[in-house]
Image (cartoon, rainbow, N blue to C red; front, side, top):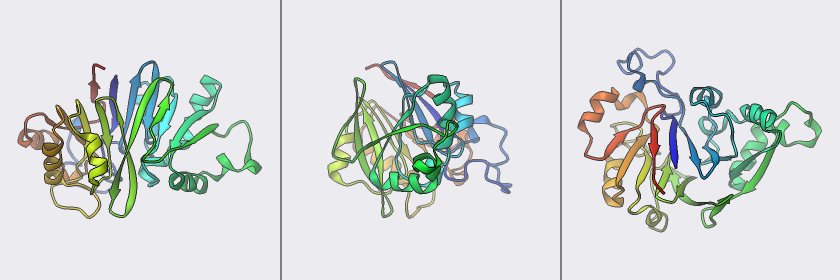
Length: 257
């Protein structure tokens, strides 16, 4: 399995429009962050988690030439706004793209992208989508890949993370119930959100993320959904415990399964 961090930033991305802080003005590529997303290549399948506003550029930058499925964590715009840009995959693959989401997320997608799903607006140029319903208690099967949803809470909003064999991806989490947390013990790689140093009402901050990682004991942990308030990448990385790393756009994670 190869996982590519296609976006490691928070909802505004980094740099933030109009901001002159040292992070936003940094020349280090690791301080330039698209909105949060990953690409997974496994068992011959190409899977993306979330299609945020930067989806088009993420696919171009990572040179993703095919797409089999999209998994949606939740309905916030920084995670769904790029859905229309699956169209080139429709054209090149000559088939619809499979998307997996909860009923709550699908309701938002139908509102935001009404022309995709409303029969009145169907014509050859719109995205072609096959939608599959998911919930936290039922595993997903994509070909011979087993994917286990993990529900977390983004303040009061349910968000799904996903576990595939020894890898798990969690974003926009502030709390996790024990029944869901138990799915995340002793992973090979855990990718998890850590917004900033200061506490936040709906995201783990750095300290909370590190404490959870110590509890779950993955072999390696990678922090994502990072804002400019976290600080300069290289400076923060030097202070992190062993086997915990800041994500950066373009980071590739190879797992033997």
